[in-house]
Image (cartoon, rainbow, N blue to C red; front, side):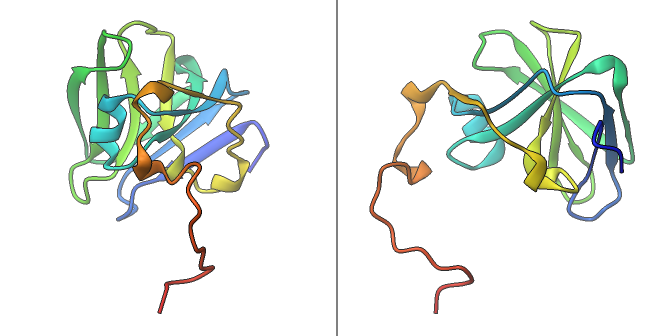
Length: 137
């Protein structure tokens, strides 16, 4: 895989995507919409140009109002439900890839977090937590 190719798949591997080029941004979004869509404290997002993006497989979409206040279309696998990418109405030239679905998530290097006013204790940020490299016994 070229360093300029970004690929990913869903949990059941029936859906896949590819983005070509350099990221426009890499971030963690803590808006309430991203929290609810992902079921997590924040959503790691890789912003890419839509012109170099393609997706394949049994996809379904759902439109909601994103943190920007504008509609965003979230795309997920119809079989396993994995949330894969978004198409925000306020920026039709980009696609927001949900970095947890990247084939090589180690390439994701966030440079900022947004909507931190909505970040809650469920993020674990600033907490003195015991960490385990594998499942805690």
